[in-house]
Image 1 (cartoon, rainbow, N blue to C red):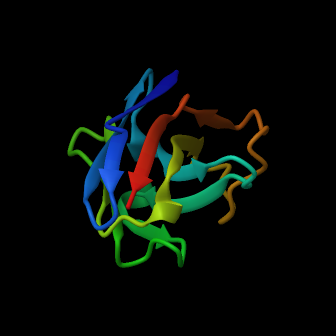
Image 2: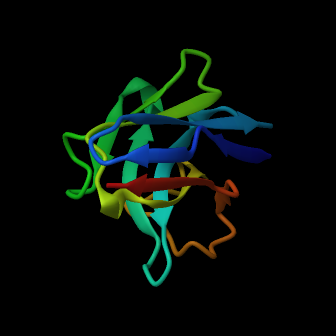
Length: 129
C-alpha cells in the first residue's frame, strides 16, 4: 500500500500547477483521500478532501485554497489530482497526499501520526514573485 506524489516544481505567483498522487495496492473508491501542505515552521495543513463513498461524491476545501484549487480522481480511482491556480507565495511547501479507509473516517482527519492514514512522501512546490 503506497502513495506517490509527483508534479511539484517551481512556479511564479499567479501560475497554475497540477499535482498527482498515484496509489498502489489499493484504489481511492474505498478511501477518503486528501491533499495536505507542510512548510518550515508551519503545521501540516489540510487543503482538500475527496471521497466517493457509497457512490456519493464529497469534496471539501480549506478556506485558503477554496476557488483556487480543485481535487479530482481518475475514473479508475487510482490517481488523485490537485489542480492549483492563481498560486500565491504562501502556497509554497511540501504537498502530501493521504488516504484513510472510509469506514474509519469520521469527518475529520486524525493526527498525522495515526496508523490509520497512509501518507505519501510529498512533492515540493516553490512559488516566487
